[in-house]
Length: 137
Image (cartoon, rainbow, N blue to C red; front, side, top):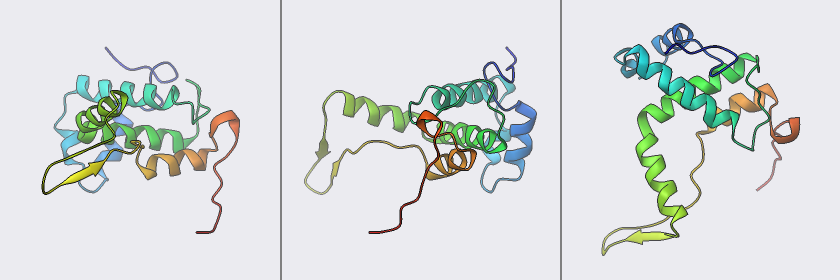
């Protein structure tokens, strides 16, 4: 199944291939099948499109949105299982875990800062606003 820009992706596989060819540490992308690349791009597209923190549409065209989708694809390739496991623990009411030598409090799992930065540049915060950095403590 091929991805279609403006329907289920903002990025073509060829664009993602070119991006990851120049990204440090991203050689694992090249080893993926086209089907796996498409699945990651579609999953990242849906993840960003349906996140209420952003005001995106299928036809969003800003280059920073494509950048965010590729970075989200990379995050999902590398951390999806851990991300989903942690989300499931939180959803089931687990707030902390540990043993005699280790403990952890489970906080909200957030997307990587580079994704938020790209979407900030595109000005697609909830309600069509923009992200604002407020200096201070």
